[in-house]
View 1 (cartoon, rainbow over the protein chains, first blue to last red):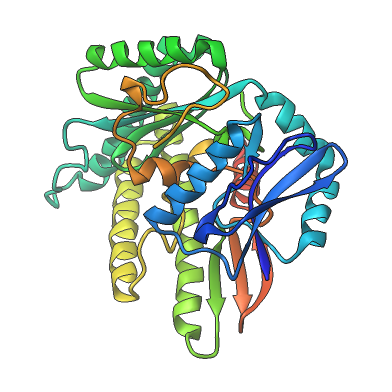
View 2 (cartoon, chains in turn orange, purple, blue):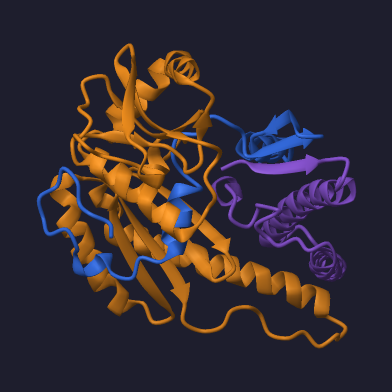
Length: 221
Length: 88
Length: 66
């Protein structure tokens, strides 16, 4: 029986009673040093379905309701409790550090989508098709970077950290995540809402608060 | 979630194709980013930009054909959604 | 769907509308604690090589002199 990892928290983090995870399996906590890992039994790596993602997310949010947690990536499985302890011990300081960094904050996400079709014009095989293709890609990237800068200028000062992806998908010029302290969340959401009206060529979707998925391991600036 | 590229006795061809295409796609994206940086930097002649553009265009179209032929989509090559955007 | 946690304002804010699967994918499959690399190369069901794309790309980037 393998274990699915939901989150890593302080050793003192209390598991909400009766909380279950995917497939209604009960959760338990494995502690090591100053850390604990919340896991649930699973037969195999879970299949990625919208329902499973939602359930996983809800479970992590329940855990977060009790205190700061580092969410695990969906589908992170460990062979047994010894493997969980091994994970906690081998990366103990790094994980404890990450936990400290996100304490008292949540992740807010801003996703932009172009309003016009920027999939690119159909290319007539003219003498400059190559240059048009590359310059088109360049223009698309520049527009996305400008939009990211506009978003950042509007809300960046409210965040402790940011993680921004440019053109993660062709239709998503900007996928940004901000780590925001609790008292500033309302202000952040309000500013996002106002910002959208000022951007003529893209729509913005602001979601959250999320567990700090984008701020658990990576180096951010 | 880890992308699993598996070469099993039964599907050696598809596993290998997925591996090769993933690496080609990674390199294609890296090179295209680099080309855009060079254009921005102004160090390429018009003729060079045209030649590069034609090559990337052809590569991109050929990748789409190969993906279709072997029943792979962008998720299988897990690069569009990957962490590339963070770094380049 | 996304609830607030440790944070006392209303659970669903006006801005928290329209959470698509894509937002879940972006976080749950892109972020979070991982124990493996991004690409696992396996032969005959045996995992042989793990690649961390971030490390790989960072290395290539460095090699490209930027």
